[in-house]
Length: 221
Image 1 (cartoon, rainbow, N blue to C red):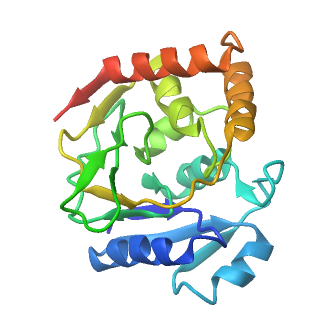
Image 2 (cartoon, rainbow, N blue to C red):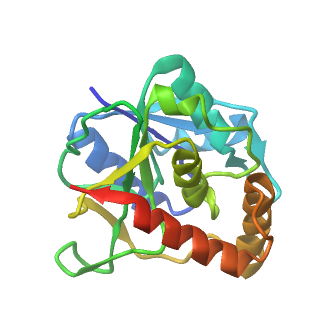
């Protein structure tokens, strides 16, 4: 049974219920990594296993779980799919764990039903991270639920000569809702991202260039 790791949010509960239900219906083992205070609230809405962590970034207005909480868990327990908490999966993912690879996934955005959707190209919502790759991921201040963590992982993979794999057709869907970040938060995570990777610090150019590089390195199947 493949493992899904996410971090559920105290907001946007209904969309997250759609997502979690889709994962469980496909037989995935689902675990959410959260702060202690968030777990107490979330247990009322979700019947899954919660993992408490103190790797929390609260500089964005609420408790966000740092990326390293996920990669540290994978180091100890094995490969897993890291996914944003409101992303539905409609069909089982055909993941073949191969040496020196990670898998990267885009979502399809929809408003009313899955049949009318648009692939979201400018960011990524899920990664299949192997235990092998988890040891290459450095300490980071980036958090799941805000921006730039989804560029950080593939850039680290490229740096260490891992192959990025991605399906041509995405089975992941996202019901549109009010976004959880603003321009200030985007720039803040962009500055952290640039500092940790030794980029220029011009957030717009760093983001554009990183996305272009990532897309050029993806091997589609």
